Amino acid sequence: MSEALHGLVEHKLRRASQRYTQSRRQLVEVLAGAGHPVSIEDIAIQAPRLPRSSAYRNLVDLELAGIVRRVAANDDYSRYELAEDITEHHHHLVCTRCGRVLDVTPPAGFETSMAGYLDAVLAVSGFRAADHRLDVFGTCAACLQSGEDACRQAGEDEPGPQEALI
Amino acid sequence: MSEALHGLVEHKLRRASQRYTQSRRQLVEVLAGAGHPVSIEDIAIQAPRLPRSSAYRNLVDLELAGIVRRVAANDDYSRYELAEDITEHHHHLVCTRCGRVLDVTPPAGFETSMAGYLDAVLAVSGFRAADHRLDVFGTCAACLQSGEDACRQAGEDEPGPQEALI
DNA sequence: ACCCCAACTGAGACTGGTTCTCATTCGTAT
DNA sequence: ATACGAATGAGAACCAGTCTCAGTTGGGGT
Image (cartoon, rainbow over all chains, first blue to last red; front, side, top):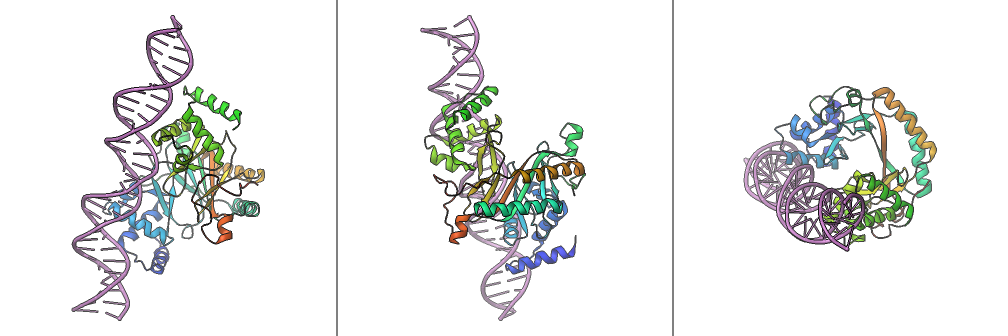
């Protein structure tokens, strides 16, 4: 997994006087490898030697250092992904049938329109936007094909077919 | 509070062989009156005689009947709002300084651009969008003015100044 | 009017994801 | 070498949300 990534992460941690330990490196690798938000369960599967208490604690530390972002899904547990200034800005496709969460990178045109909208929000309501989160709910390709819960519940080893990219 | 609203809610409940009881009416009134997603805490304040277990149970029932939508914020507890086919489609402005959540109704132009984007998503990734949620994070007018946590934590009685509308 | 059955209610016990505590170990700067 | 702050793992604690259960309500059918 790209050495540049680890360099960046280490830098961000050091800035917060934190160390880039083995546990944290493991977490970063799981998040980077998944390409979509992962739950604690997913992490436990891919890093079985890492105790949950340590995973939770380190995810908080990584979040404070601006490396990880916590994503509230609509089910009971939260998921985690690398922050957008490490990866890139993207949106989520949430399959309401199987629960899987996919990433999409929006085309420039759409983000321009978004920026215009956020400017209008500031002008009218005085709310200064810093960031946004767009989650799209619907049915993923696999579930559409089968008419059934084809894809396994979120986050088994290799997540699966399409990495949506526009 | 608009009689039409109660008629619609009652109809949706009856369709699910549920009754529109006093507790449920209270909940609907709190949600309709707030104009932004409310937490259980907010509900407890505005309807102190309603036990939490009943509030939770009824919120689930109302959600199943398509009257209420559960909104996962980024803090620890979920909030509730009337479903969009009862009110209208809108987005959320989440103030990261004071926690307040405001509603915004997007201009038609923006939603057109959104629809185009979702079509492109379908074409490229095969994901069929049914619904979307756009949350904008930033700083609300009150917090910007004061440079401090001016607005009280989410959901005191009368939420406050601007109801953002574009 | 009455009955009946399913829906509803409130109090409190319970669940389970997440956080906290604490004794121990690790890393690094002096 | 030493010291001190950071990190760790095991398990206890926390608490939003759910479930249970015994009792109440309400409305449709006779």
